[in-house]
Image (cartoon, rainbow, N blue to C red; front, side):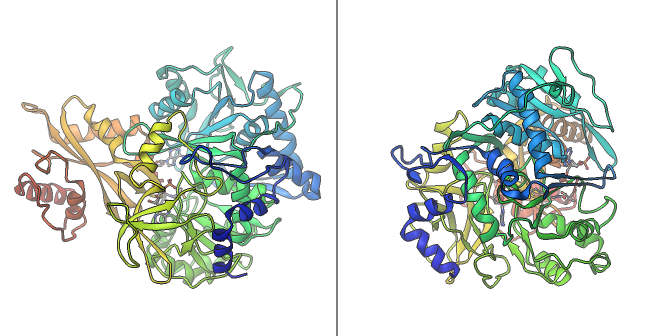
Length: 629
Ligand code: COA
Ligand code: AMP
């Protein structure tokens, strides 16, 4: 069947479509129906089924004869380590870890925070939670103690599983002191922690609270899989919103299993046994869905890569891994390709490796610029597919479903909506717009299985953030258009979220940190265009009246403050001191106009601007740091 037939089949009978897709999952009790809409506009999928994620991702493959197949390949150029774990080994390791967690009191519904780098033990920790029906929340290693503390207070975990350290090129990230700091800062205290001690750093363990990963598994009974309801939360993943308080996206168990499994063949075009590699991090949604869960649920081999696209040791790392491990589908962020392209524009490294197993490449996480796509197509000689999704959805809203049909690629477009998503472009009043017109991108409710049913402990915020602006729709927060052929174009965010190296960050969150500096009276953070990372944050500071400190010192201090409070991942290195911020007469800071000035774009003078002369001052300030040229 062609894409349009499959999409039409979903649209005419979504219930049959999703019940059919659910058959690929092993249920302890099969659901009697797919969609539960009695609580609309909040929807649930497969709610009356009973199922276990770990069984579907691990045990069933052992039962079905894939036990000796490699489940996980660990390739770590930063520690010069390579290791494989078969499905049967993974089953035994996860059952043992789950048994030890259970022995310490972890049960279905308990939250467990995981703070780990890109090592197989991170996936094992996630799967061990899933085995017990515990709800994990993975926190990205590039976040500082304060961010971890905010998540501890929101998720209220009974336990935290962490590694002693992470390795960034040229430095060791000391996870344990960051974890200790976060627990000190948080109001909620976990009962215990489990620390995976790495060779590179052995952390100090606090007697009675911190347990050694290996020691605490000694002599315990392995745990069996605990069936949970289809709508039981599989995990919580925090993502940036407009404020410093992150949103806890809830992932429901049943829909997650069904939807991810569906994507592996239909979108990513792999069969069980094929090697699938997503070069992201378990701390992001891409890592949850496509390093850990989807490839394992589908019986693929996944790769845990602890390295960077460049510098570990060179711009040929991606091609070495693809060649050595016979990767069939490769998924990365455009920024990673831009980094490789900058170091190896002619693809000298590509020529050194046999990439004959590679069938296709997928890009997501930020807008894929046409230059990068064309470069990758030329170098690799395979389809390079842009696809668009969000932490909230957990899988692609739009893409080019190569496993169904290879649709013509249109540069700048992540192609067409996936079954389950009725994507529409709306004007401010919520009316559908015509082809080619720019507006807010919304998805008609209900969203498909696997997408967020709510935010953790924040139903009112969920409704306000996503459902209230356009009743009957989910508001994506992205703006764009759909062309005459039904192809989507994602142009910009409609909120204060920016995208730095494929990482979603809140400028509002950074502003809260800047405002906490004693000399800062007022501030704004905008995302300016960057050739490598897509966007970079730039801070504008108005100092308190009478402050006679050297501007450069204050800038240095706020840069350090953001690194300490949010973390290095914020990539906040640029700030300028200005006398005033441009505002509308009602006091709204004109961030959009500031972005246009920084990027050297023409802009319309906002009719409501308070004092247009301030824009010239902003331009001069931006020029002092190399922008607004
Ligand atoms: N733990 C601790 N620190 C981390 C980290 C982690 N897991 N990941 C990144 N950081 C740090 C980096 O070391 C860097 O610190 P620095 O300021 O001391 O240099 C900082 O956070 C910013 O990181 P990043 O924006 O990733 O830039 P980079 O210079 O390290 O690398 C790229 C640039 C383009 C090579 C890199 O961003 C990359 O590979 N991105 C891939 C994007 C991706 O996977 N996105 C996920 C969504 S698909
Ligand atoms: P995250 O939740 O971190 O995955 O970030 C989701 C956001 O990243 C989206 O709402 C978009 O703004 C942006 N994004 C992700 N993928 C794409 C894409 N293929 N094209 C354009 N923007 C994208």
